[in-house]
Image 1 (cartoon, rainbow, N blue to C red):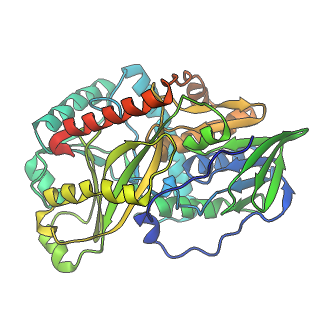
Image 2: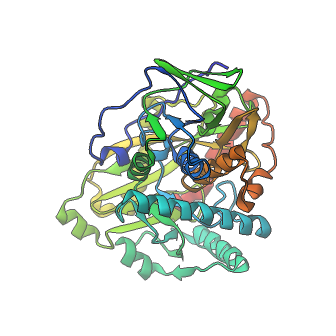
Length: 440
């Protein structure tokens, strides 16, 4: 198969820009052989490489990344590893109780792997902090969402606590939020620092990482697969595709995947005077009570806002479109932080999500010896790691109970023809953003 397109992500992601410049990339420049090929160095690639290293302690793994580690979607999210139900297509994040119990167990399994990875890599607390998060409600509608979600968590037997307006002011320094629902199991990460630090730690005499090495062709050969890059190729018996929605670019799951972009802006560093005017704590993270609302994080002297979703079946957004879309961030920012109305946004970016109509992933053998660890439905930090480790177990023939649970998921439901799907998805997104009201 020839790969139909290569990843393109608009704007430099602020998380990556805060890090020191990495050493020069090491692209693949020769023809080599290995026991395993893992394509993609995001969260799913990390999960796959770590688990393969454990299951096949003598196997040689070649790890291919199209760009630089941390510059793609894995380094562009809000940095929240959420353990509890978090269905972006629902009214209150919750779903069927039995399904959600199984999902929580799987999410925590992945978070535990992430914790060990962070510990092995010697990451700082800023890069990996299991401090919980707050579902923030700006108005009565959001507060009702939180009440409904709290009832769902109570039925699941999950710990949670309510914060009133004064509590929210103590955390954030602002009066915008009416209430909040705190849950303790979420991990807040610096996503670019996490994936870059963990990937560097996973490289060994058996694991070789090649950056700036996009796979442009993937071909069956007598003894397995041949992955072709611009300057070299790799042969191996088995391959794991950890490329999220770009699975479709490799020729799989046509008319089953929904490609969505979401967007974020990060302020310049706040001065000491501005931080005093803001008040509140130096580190916190809020998800919106309405799934279509605004996520906000404070990371020391910077604030990050994330909102807006656009349906992009061609998996591309221009820089001009990004500039129009993120104007919403400025309005959301000033509404929440009027004392900082003159603070500029230093970085603005977009990131790709991939969803299915029925909320399932694609973790399966899509061709003999070719496994997909893809489609995380907007929860890539956790579901990505989970799908990577599950694909590795399945490919190695050592399937755990958690893996059996994931592998038993239904197939993605078909989408309508492209014009209808595009019009319908865009209309639904805009309507739901409108309904989010003050939560946006």
